[in-house]
Image 1: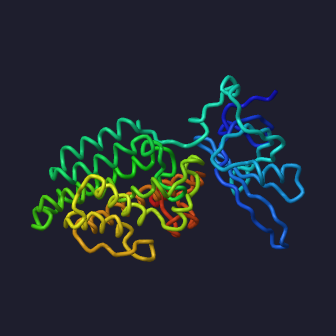
Image 2: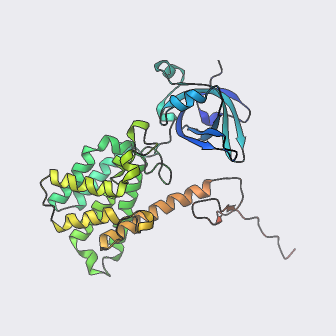
Image 3: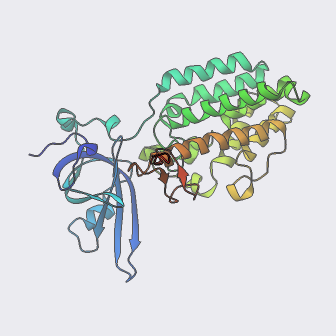
Length: 340
């Protein structure tokens, strides 16, 4: 039997057995109306595509049995194309307990954060204790985080857009918290409003809770690779506001409390505009700070990924990136010596 432990190790033209996670499965039509399934498999560092056509020996199994988020052992021939890696599937089955002896490890079959999620989570709890002095607000944030600790440590920041890997959610909210603390410290001397203790506490609480609705938006049953029905129909912004309000009610916090109203507002407004999904625009100091800090972290992540794509040594990244403009990453050829 051909044995390759990692999808990332496959070479062009190689036939191999390997383990991977099914990340996407979409039913599509050709221009002539012929149906086919477009699949995407992944391991920790590589994603590859596969196509299952109508009439294929795999068609029924793909339609009825192959489940997004599950792990499989595949045999196929790998090809490197201008659009990325592709695999021609010859065999596929769900992983079995005995596959662990052959090198299967779910941690190697999906991307994950380089940071230790347990350590990062503990640092966030320390931040709450150090910065949030209002007892009820401290209790609310701590309770929401600790109640959902296991899920938060495994959660990606998103399915596709940024921090789309296990532990990415923690990375993102930690970075947003660092961003807002920098903004608060940098501008508090110029603007008295930023010296208001409740503004600072709410801003830090908002950094930690602005995306908390993703706990219900992303489907843990398929390894957070797809959205739940609530995620599709309602979305993480409103789900997050509901989670904050329900948690406050469970803790006996007066729902008419002004700081709770302001906390709910910054969750609802953190994406800035209705075009981006926010029911309301940011209308308080803390809501604006969260919006700017969130945008900054997402854009820094997307810029880094854009500069890493198509790393062929060319000085410019093509326009096919989230910013839709060429990005200079350096290494221009040196100019000839005009004095020679």
